[in-house]
Length: 151
Image (cartoon, rainbow, N blue to C red; front, side, top):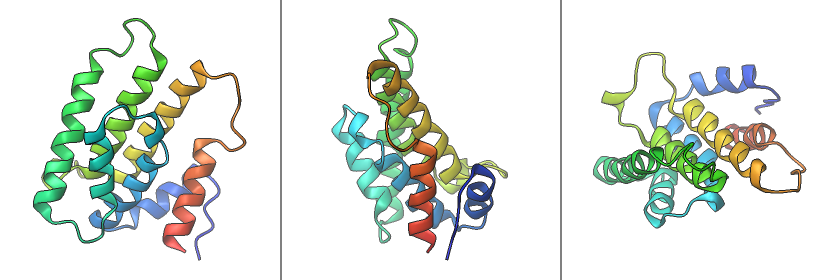
């Protein structure tokens, strides 16, 4: 049973996963911040990434949808400091990271880790707009997600 409690252990665990496992776990990280997404295509892409039985074509289409939205929203980042718009961008970036096709993944890149970092960025942007502090950090939530998935 996994007992991930910090980023070092998380990265070690993620590096031991197959590409499909990275996609599913990365999609779970994106799902944990899906509430910050403003786009149905991104939500559907995350849902596709969560499916163990997704066909390569479905996964590629989901990647393209998430990547397209992340690219579109990137130009808005930093303009007027609309933190929730930036959070929306990072949710799409997390989904795209999780769904990245094998041919586009660099040798030392890990889909799930990249999705985790993008999801954390989404939450950081959200924290700029809300007054309440969550009971659990996104990092801690990701450790729990990874432990449940690997356990």
